[in-house]
Structure formats: structure tokens, C-alpha cells
Figure 1 (tube, rainbow, N blue to C red):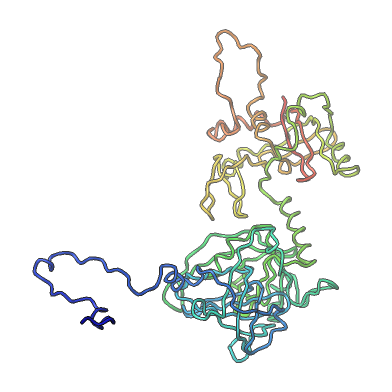
Figure 2: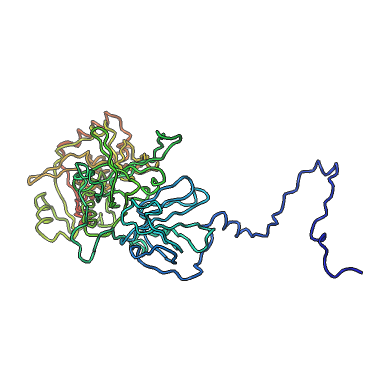
Length: 505
């Protein structure tokens, strides 16, 4: 009589001795039989890929009010410094404007986490320790230290936010430490860059407020103290008193790629200072803190200052093509002839908040076309905050290796004069058609060509200037020098510049 219960042997597959024919066959692929699904395996290998929901309530409070010991906290802040430690965990310094907390996040591989300076993050933790007992006593305003084990401890978790520019998440948590926005007078320890480079670095606790001027290319440097290489990037920074270079190393290089020249503002606390002969540079130490685009009155002032300097020093300003009707401005009924003095008077002494157009009859007093052709600066543009020059209408950015369309350098026209004053050519913003009319419309076009004359069906452009040899460049320069032309201009209140819409001979 058969037993109603299965035997132990029924749970095991019967072993079959291999035969000679089966030994020559390729082994069949093994099927996973450990009982785990693919999603569970992926969650164990890549903890950040799994969806995490808190299993219990977490208290949200400012970092300055955190208490050491077992407690469920949800912490919001921005990364002000970080470093990779022995290929085992990343050491994050997070600030919310009231205090600083150190978060040690352990990972399986270093590529699991790619934090950036200024990135918003949220931390769920169940235990906090004192900074003096966890090796974080040297970090200023540090109130607690916590450890995160994603995928192993389900009571702790960390999330790195990717906020779009201008979104609600991008605008919060940008108040720096020791800053009272309700009754703001000054930020303690803040000094100018010139004062820091002179003697301020001796204090060791100073703060400098800087604007990004340029972001250089990523470079690979051979390490001196250990084997291997390190990534490095040089960021040009400035304020209203001086300029210098900020060097970022290792994993911090990726942070600079998101910074916008002449727009991104950095508040650096306790920066490192290095001097090489007459050259000086700054960097970051383990106790330094970087607030990216902080929101307080001094930072707002520096942004406005950088915006004015960008208009003054930019090598190329794009023409505002959607501001005026160019055909109406050149051939319409409302054509007013101005002098240079009258334009200045209307801009300075009347309501200059509106755009207007007119005509201007001037003499080209100075042409620097040959000079810029020899310097290979006939065409220009900007990319990554770095000027880009060439004698061709296209160029390659040395930083991002992207192909950029170039425009004619406005500095090839030195100065324009009339009976009332002078205008520097580098201050003008030219339309592409205006450049073409200036260089290739000096001979009046005949309405009806002669019988033996061939009609040129190919439309000329200012780009034809870039294919001329040195003799052609000199002939063009001599043709323009001391010529009288009529310019159709438009005043742009947005750019605060005179824009050239067209040229008539």
C-alpha cells in the first residue's frame, strides 16, 4: 500500500551517470533555481533602482535641532562637500542653512553614487551619532553624523534629487549658514577675493563670494604621492576686485560641468590657498563648504554685476532678430536721420525703456580686417565661457569639443565718425545681412544688366570673406577705409547696445 505522504527521495533529482556520447555534448545552460525574481536580484545589486517607501513615520526638522541617538529623522539639505573614502563609502557634507550633518553612504561600487556640489538630497535615518566620536569634529557647524546602508538596512535611505532649473525644488534650501534673511546686515567672515589672496587666507575661516567666469576642459594628472591618475578641472572665478582659478579634483570634476559661466555664483567657506611663484589658485579642503547659487543680498548684487560685465566684455553678442521688422525699418515711411550725439541724447536723457530705429550717416575711420586675419580672430563666438576664434565661419570648442557657428568679429571695424561724435565698432551688434551689404554692396547694383554681362545667380554672403587670401583681405580693407555709408540701426533696451540692421552705400 502506497504511503499518502511523499518520501524524502522524491524531492531530489535522480543522478544519471554520464555516458560517452553525453560527454562530447556542450553543457546546457543552468537555470536559476534560487527562488529570487529578477526584480529582487536587481534591487540587491543596485539598491538605488528599487522603489523605497518608509515603513514608519519620520520626523522632519532643521539640521540644527537634530539630537544624537536612536530617532527616526527625515533630513533635507544640499551637498556642500563630499569625498570618496577608500573605495567603500562616500562622505557627504549636507547643509540646510541652519546646520551641517555628515552622511556616510556605503556602496558596492564607486559608480553607484555620483553626487554633485549643490545637489539637493533627502536622507531617512534611524540613528545619529555625535560628530566628535565619528571623526567629523573638524567640520564647522556639524551637529550629527549618520550612516546609510542602501539595500541592507531598510530603515535608512538616501535620495538624490535632479531638479530642473527654476522649479520649486531648485529654489529651496539656498540660504547659507549664519545668514539671517529677515534682518540681514552682513555675512560673518565674508571678504573680497583680493583681500583673501593678499592676507585673508591666513585666518583659515574666511568666506569668499565668487562668480564663475569659465569652465576648462577635464584633464588627467599623474598623482605624485601614489600610483595612478587623477582628474582635474580649472574653473575661472572672479568678483569685483580680482580673478583667480579654482581647481577641482577627482569626483568633484562633474560638479563644474553643470555651472554656467557669468551666471553661477559660489560661496566658498574655508577655501584652500596655493601659491606658485606669482600665480595663485584656490581649492577645497576636507572642511571647506561650497554653496552653489546661494540666495542672499550679496549674491544678488554679484549676479547683477556679472551681468553688466558680461555685456561689456563679451566677444560676441547674438543679434536680436525678433525685435524689429528690418524691411520696414530700412524702407518704411518712418525713417529718421540721427547724428551720433542725438542718439546719445535720446538714450541718456529721455525715456530709454523703449526700442527705436533710425538712420545714421557715418564715415568708416578705422578698419582692422587684415590685423585680425593675421591673428586668426576674424570670426568669433563663445562656448563654455571661453572665447572661440577662427578665420572660418565654424569652430570647435576646446572644452566640450562641440561644433560652433561663428560670426564676424565686430572689432574688425575700429571706429565710425560723423560731424557730432564717434562710435567704437566693437560696441555694435551686427546683423548677418548688414555684414554682407557692407562688404559686397559697395558697387551699386544695376537693375538691368548689360547684354554681354553675366548675371551672378549665386547670392553672396559675409562668409565669402573668409575664403579670400591676404591680398583680397587687404583690397577689401582699403575699399572700406574712409568710406561714407548709411547705417540703419536699432536701439535695444534689452542688450543696451546699438544694433546694425542694414547698410546702404
